[in-house]
Length: 598
Image (cartoon, rainbow, N blue to C red; front, side, top):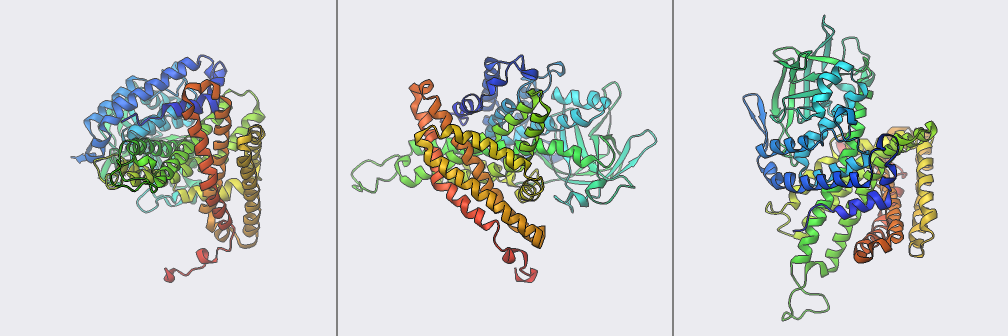
């Protein structure tokens, strides 16, 4: 089949829609140009197709195993991680003087997205390590950076985040893991952590666990959480490995998808002390951990979108090659069967996949653009503006692609029919892999509460006003295109409806409290995400019309963007208006139904 990587769309979004090459020559990115960025994208695509994709099915069928207290992963996965390390992708985001490529965040998202599409299970080990390293870079001591961060950038040490516990789940206020100060200013960590991706494996010399725990005199709730770096193997001051730390794998979790990524129940300090060092300040661990969490949430988003894209690419190829049935106007059994793509409902499902997957990719890359614009600006007010906009969009970037990327993968299975439901084809695995993205790094329900309760209603509308400003700029440009007039009018109406909904929900919060008023936060998030993606599709369509001459020999590519934009506005945005109307209705059915009635 053709590649699972839609590189042409990625390049179009990066360079024609978002103008990422404009960052080159500025500040941190002054040594880059489009040629250097393209070379990195080429390498990422090559490794995705030739190193990660070939063992994706094997990773799914041969899960990590716990053998005498040690987790063993697929040899091909270990080898692939070694290739990624030697190619420089563990440190691609880091500064030149740390051995990195100093890449723009947007390019990093694109590279990671391609790798996730090819093999999300193997890529997860690197993704977690990079996020943990970034947290240490922001909050760690110089000693922690020397002993832990540098080996992580080199791909010798890997990293994890250890938040959840067997009884606490997403409720971090209820964690029980404890940390006791020792005479040498290190800490003894005791407790259990659950659902730890990459919690143990044999692909690295060491694993640095970033663990949330409570000090003995810590305040109750999330204000009493501290963060600790707890390595699997203790590291001597000269960087050499010492004794095995007191961390034991109590068991492996067997998942629906992401099966190649080990997922562990870890016991700290059960038989021997688990020694850690404080990261940041006492009782401020959750704020530091959210440095990693927010990065991980954007990573989840690009994973959801790219897994959807991979499913779309496979089902598109299948629909073009598979010949079955005849058109409704030509039922003569003597005529040859037509390709599946000629059937209207199959075309609908393909357009739905295209609109969701490419819309999700655009959303995640735009988040990267905001980070990069913040990096290069010298204007403090502009930096604060970009922070507010990214803060508003982060829950949407995590939740929308994972929600609707899964819908796209569902359509891919449907197009293949019985073959799609079988393990002989990859679309069912892509669906199972994508299903996790609605759960980890904060469930989509948590993202909905964060968006509506904290970002939309709790931030004096700063982020919302900035978003509407960005959208108005796109509308101003798109109105110059006659073929986009209807889309502009629809988007303007949707903006007004979102504003009206927030006023009504805000009034209900004042009158009835958050528990009742936010009962419909999830429909609001879906509608809000659809509005943002509709805006981005308008931006894509505007750019496609503007560069038609550049794509003269491949007009079909640009026409596909315009068709997907039309489809999203005509078929999907009306559903968002219905969700929006649900978001402010009387919540009695949800909030007041007695437990016994379920």
